[in-house]
Length: 389
Image (cartoon, rainbow, N blue to C red; front, side, top):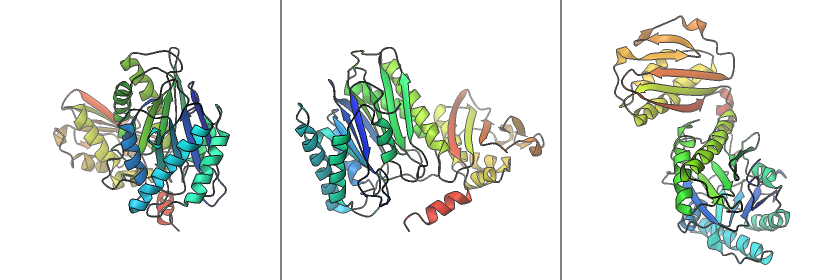
C-alpha cells in the first residue's frame, strides 16, 4: 500500500517534536527515477500557506524529485518569514538528499507540504533535524510511516495501492476536517512507476480530482494548505494510454476520498447524495453540494431523522433547472418525497447504520452526479471548539 507501492519510490516518517507528543510529524517521499515528472493541484483559497505558494512555483517545471511534509503546524499566515522557512526546508532537504545520492538535487526539485494550526511559525531547528532523520530512515517500506507522520486530527492513516497492467499507482492522504471542494481538500501524495510526461500527469490528476476530492464536502471549510501531488518515476518502463492512467489515478483518489469521509471529525454517518435527472452534470453537482452543505440536513442525519423537507429546501437555493412539484427524494431506498410532496411514511427509513443514501431526481434532464458528505455531530463541535487550546 501507500506511496512506495510503485517502483522507484522511498519514504519515511519520523518524530521531530513538532507536535510535542512524540508522534511522527515529518514525512519524506523521494522519487529515485529514472524519471521525475510530476503535477499538482492546490487550494483555491485566496489565503494560501507558504508551502502552497512554494510548491506551486516548483510544479511549474513539471519536475519533482522529493516532497517533505510536516504535521504540527500549517505555516500559513506567517508572512515573508514563513515563506523563507519553506524555502529553507526545501533547500535543506535537497542538500541532504544530494549528499547521499548520485543525483544532485536543488531546492526547486522539492515540494513542501505543511498541516496543523494556522498563524504560527514552525520550529525550524526541530523541523530540519526531522528532515535529517527522515533522510536516514528512507526505505521502500516507509510508506506507512510517512502516512502516519502527516496525520493531525486523523484517527488513522489513509493509503491506497491500485495495480495496473505492468505498473502501479500508490498514494497517501491526510484529512479529517476542513474538507470542502476547490480543490484538493487535504494533503495527498500519489505516485506511479508509469512513464508519463508532466502534461499527461496534470490532465490525469485534474480529471481524477474533479470526480473524487471535488465531490467530497465534509464541513464546507476550505483549507489554506490543500495540496495533491502526482509523481511518476517511470521505473516500470510502461507508458499507459492517457485515458487508462486517468482511470487508475481516479480509482486511487476515490479510495482516498472515501477514507477521508469515513474519518471526518466527529462523524457518525457517511452520506452519499446522488442527484439524477439534471440538465447538466454541473447542475447535478450544484444540487448535491447544496444538500451536502446544509447544516440542517447534516444535523438531521446525526439525529437519525429522515427530514426530507430540509433536502428540498437546500435544493431550492440552487440555480439548477427544475420544477419544485416534480422533485422526488428517497432516503435509504424509501421514497419519502414524490413530486415535491410527502411520499411514503418517513418512519420506514432505517438510519441506524453509518451509511446514508439520499437520491434526488430533478426530472429535468439526463445528467447525474454524486457528492459525499457526513453528519454534523456534537463530536465535531467539540473537536473544533478546542482545537488550538
